[in-house]
Amino acid sequence: MSSGAQPSHPNVTPKTQPDLTLTGTLDREATHRLCEEARSLLRARDDADTLVCDVADVGPPVLSAIDTLARLQLTARRAGGRIRVRNPAPALRELLHLVGLPIEIEMDRQAEQREPPGRVQEAVEARDPPL
Image 1 (cartoon, rainbow, N blue to C red):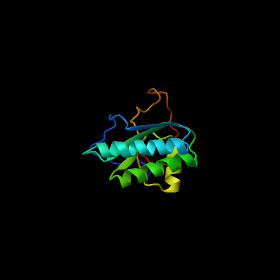
Image 2 (cartoon, one colour):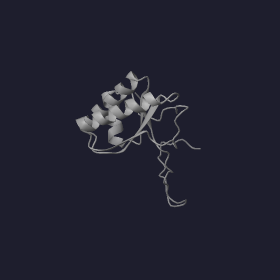
Image 3 (cartoon, one colour):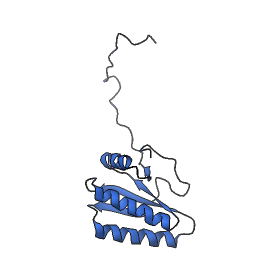
Image 4 (cartoon, rainbow, N blue to C red):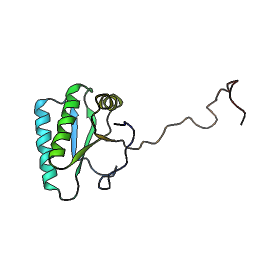
């Protein structure tokens, strides 16, 4: 799985409200509740097969968070769908990549912060070819 931006699903755009919002530390009880909610959401839909899960406020990226996301993915697949996580912290993204969990990742586009013009000075290396 690549941790880079994935192509957007036609039914889900970055402006779409998330279907599920995961917050805090995820335990067994929260995982069970989220899986039941995901199953209900997918059964109620006719056209969309992707559940968007906002994980921006998930606690530290521990294996319980990975377990929850894996169980959500399995629940969604059994119901004929899949999940996409939105805004994972860099550490959670890396952990997802390391365990190889095939989940799509969606990042909100943030404006790039740059230095004001004229304030950045680049060093020229002696081995750099001339322009």
